[in-house]
Length: 195
Ligand code: ZN
Image 1 (cartoon, protein in one colour):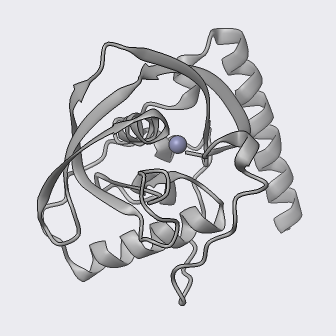
Image 2 (tube, helix red, strand yellow):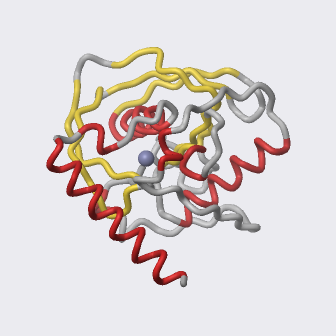
């Protein structure tokens, strides 16, 4: 997910990892975004590498959060930028492995939401104002995080990715068609540039 769209241009570019390994972001309408995900059963070197690459990819794209499925991995993992989660900008992102929403507030809020798999597209989405998520961290410890505002939104957005739910699923058929057309056009342009 993107942060506040208005802040995108002013937000400092953060490089926390010296050895950058940016993976290509899977963009809509790539069917891989709808694939079923699978739980992580052990924190292996492969998982640690995947999470490090997800962080590099998220920061390179100036994102606020990213799910593993957005870099083509099917593990149930997402990360959220530390500053979005109320921490310091220089802290590593919060890693959510096998996350589960345990509580959503009845109070909701509508706000423009973006996604790294839909560059340049923002749609108003109604979300619970507060959310609580239980997950495992990279040390294999279970934690529960309650958040409000942008972080709560990011947890709901990234959680949706793990069940294949995307921004276009929140809009009407006309807007959906418009977004799909725009994204297909961009994919074609990208492919043409790569040739
Ligand atoms: Zn997203």
